[in-house]
Length: 304
Image (cartoon, rainbow, N blue to C red; front, top):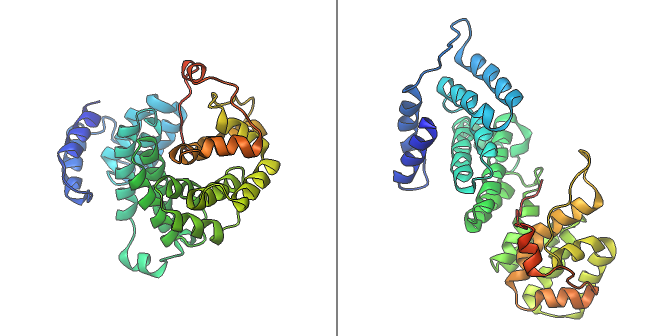
């Protein structure tokens, strides 16, 4: 807690997006409480790796002190920062801050020549691949924190660095482009990729509606999406709690719920879009807003 509160203070006092100036202060903060059981028979990186294995075994908050110890040994290793960020995902502002340090750590590990050589092909080598993963992490946390413009730019950066989009940044970016009224980019994405997951056909139809309103082509796109994935429309018009999973494999209901959760804000941002959805698909609300609120329904807008 001493480390986390100190880190928050440093971050809040820092001006600008570049965390390079903060790095020495973060390192000094970590040095204030050295690792109690320093193993001098191992390199710092080796002991830090062993500590992270312990953190994953401990799981969640119980692994936080162990992950912080790993940072005391290797302040700019990506993995401990990632662990801290995902562990505090229930605190979006804190998670976004920790993810920004994970991104900084991943960036530090890349040699400038490697960035130039693999520009547009970042998935092809481990160090640039880790940077892509860090961008995805920070984008997810920014979305949860409501900082969607920042998330938009990070996801756009991913598509520049990895033109084949191996991590699927486009699936998070498309709803943000519509939500932020960047319809030119939304139409480019739906033209560039002809995806057919549960959310994409609905987002393609929504991009048409955002541009032109209630058109025959838009209705046709929406009807096609509904024929393929009818449960998504049901969950779009009914903000119900996330279905429970009985095992590790997601059910059709769970995938549909996630797709609706991803696309819902797009429909809400445009006047009449929800009514248009109901009219075209025939789906009607069966849950009142009061019942949804009472059930604790909260949009995650994160794609798992």
